[in-house]
Amino acid sequence: MRVLFSGEALLEYGPLEPVLPDLPDFTYIPCLWTRRFEDGVPEGWLSVMKDIQRESNYRRTKLVNNLNSFKAVIDSDAFQGKTPEQVRQELKRPDSVLIKTPGSMLDIESNQGLAAGQFEMLERGDYELQQVSGIYDDALGKETNAQSGVAIQQRQINSVRNQVFAFDNLRMMKKREAKLLLDLIQGGGDEFMEAQILTEEERETILLNVVREVQGEKVVFNDIRTLPLSIYVEEVPDFESSLQEQQEALQALLGNANASLIMQSPLFMKRMGIRDYEELAAEMKQL
Image (cartoon, rainbow, N blue to C red; front, side, top):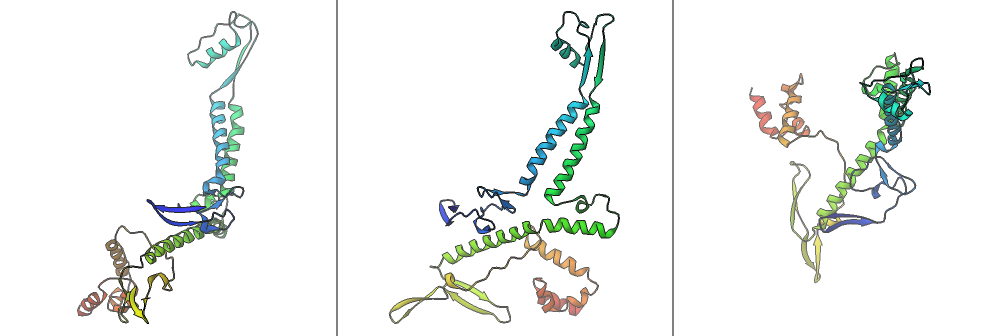
């Protein structure tokens, strides 16, 4: 079962169904990707890349080790009185001093030749990360083997398409969050509220949760818990305050070649969401 608390207050509960695409049963923490089929545990976008990243980390460690290590081929009597382990420990030191028996063989070979294979596997890992993530170098603005503009654009489009369902899940999560807030508002059905419906030109004020007696029984009119409300998710830029949002809107409007004509129309500026549009339009007409 899933539950959602705010402090000690239970806001929502219901059965947990780990069957895709049962998105309403996702946790409230934004989980925008998918779930494991075997147990229904939510996964993020990086989950499909973890195994490849672990292998890349292993290959990178082996690469560094090969670049900084070497092997020694010696005769059995090259170092009298020293065991092979003692010789190995001495060779590890950058200031090692080796005294060998005259005429014996000592050949030290670097392991850098083994590093080339690890480096190739690392490059292959980068390609596999792009395959499972769906984001290719073209989408990041990097130079690739795609020469024509059509090929580059097609790869960029494919990268965007691979991420579409994540944004769809995000919108659904936002809609579920808005539905939860609406349920909380509708839960306060024992208080009188005043609301403004329609536009300012068609202003109509109604009282919500008005209790009247009808034939000896108390009846609630305009009950907020039963109003036919719909939820629409709109993606808007993130602003620190409403004042900053108004400033950005005015700056964008002033950059228009027909700004002087547009700002004389109260209706047009109202459609753009600019405040005090009537006063602003009146001042512009006086200029």
